[in-house]
Length: 154
Image 1 (tube, rainbow, N blue to C red):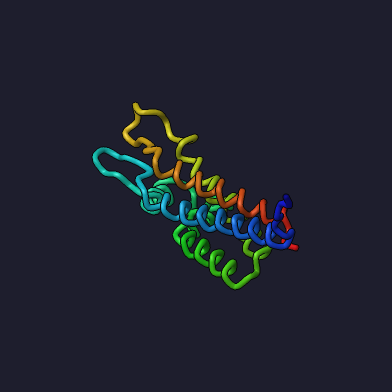
Image 2 (image 1 turned 60 degrees about the vertical axis):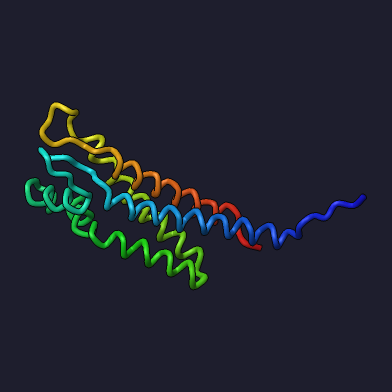
């Protein structure tokens, strides 16, 4: 009895589709997580956009790299959509580099409230759902983008 093995080209194409799907799913999770609750201040629940806006007004986040990053935070969803469009047009390596850069920035910002804000005795508390979903999306997109580089399409 002979076994039928898929051709190497079909296997490479399937791996490629899986990696692109991982990237796109990670981008969707990143954007979704930014709209979920991140902080609670008294009775008010705030998403990442509201939290970044308040942090920029109340702290010295206006200068340097952190200031530029927080100023560009509202455009993160547009950047993620742009990465997905680049994937659709077939420039997978360019899109993967863009996803890598975006995911590192988004993942870093998602960890900041969890690491920097004090525990539950404070009036401002972290709601872990938003940052965790955003960080999970960043990790998933990173895995997909790195997989595209590790498994080149033949």
